Amino acid sequence: MSGHWSRDFGDPDDWRRPHSYPQDTNGYAVASLVLGIIWLWWIGSILALAFGYAARKQIAVSGGRQGGDGLAIAGIVLGWVGVGTFVYFWFLIGSLAQIVP
Image (cartoon, rainbow, N blue to C red; front, side):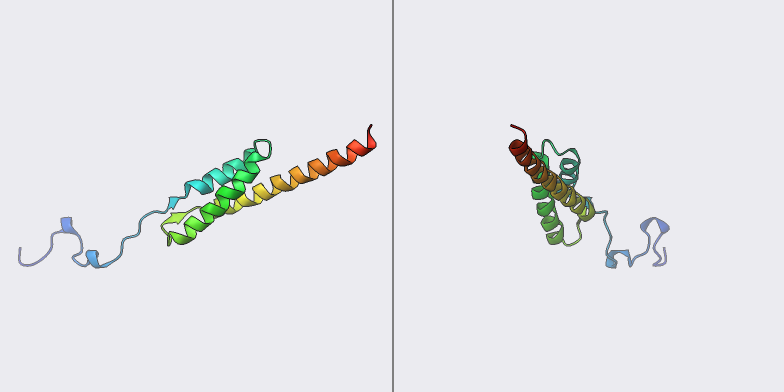
């Protein structure tokens, strides 16, 4: 015990180094991706957009504590695909209504 630290305590300078913690995945990002995949008669697409944009904002504000930006982007893309499909579907139905009496 002549002033040396035992191996159980590790390096005495450890407390000075910042410790990294694993990122938490944002729940809204996961919800955005899931809703973008299952669509739920296009209501899911709108919710995927809302959750995706909210998740991206929360992730940006978290300062690196939260992850899932890629999930949020995928949910946003799938949400816009769903909204585009919905609009296309209704244009198709509207044009067929004029053709078929």
